Image (cartoon, rainbow, N blue to C red; front, side, top):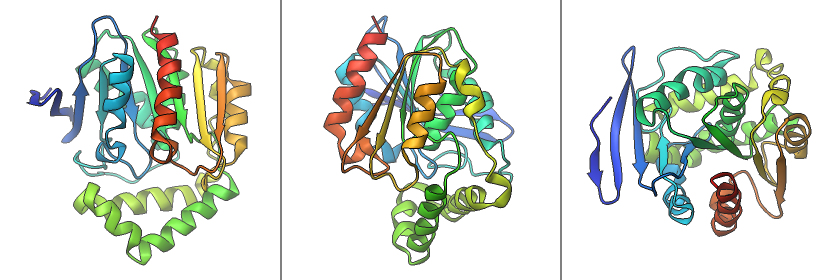
Length: 268
């Protein structure tokens, strides 16, 4: 474990996970007895790209918060090996439990995941950990759709002309090219077309809030429908109109209200 450096009300530090892998994280304070909110970023995301959303949600709910860069992202260690069909399972079943055990051991928590982070949250939720109180997914994927691949091809064009690359460089620095290639090449590879995690959804028994933008360029309503109909826990679907892939950035106040209401019910 790394020692926290206090920056205002939040604690910033790095966690050593072994095998030369360090994870950058921030912890936000909360009231005693409230569950932790653990934020899992998107496929090209990082702590910084959440902006102040985690802090704002922690303030609204009184819950402490943990947000971290997965390996290969942001200020964490770079990717050290090629991704496989099960790379999201690795994040959900190896990296995430390691982070939780080191930073918030024996504490109840909820997972809040965006895009890849939402898929990671679902995989983790299927493990039925007794301290897990609920899941919030934002534009999560459970299968590969044609629109997902079309959206990635548009991202390739934006990366190639420098627009997206410049935006990502601010957050990922020297890791930017490797991260984008790992994401885009994996999802568009023929061997990844069969990726599907619908089989594990019935094992999820905790309550879910399932958010997605109606204009999401990476996923259709099929993603939400599958999560809601196949999970065993109570699941609330919310499709946001005139909204794309990042509802919490496009409509932050609405998402804060919706998530806080859900979290407060689970934290009683």
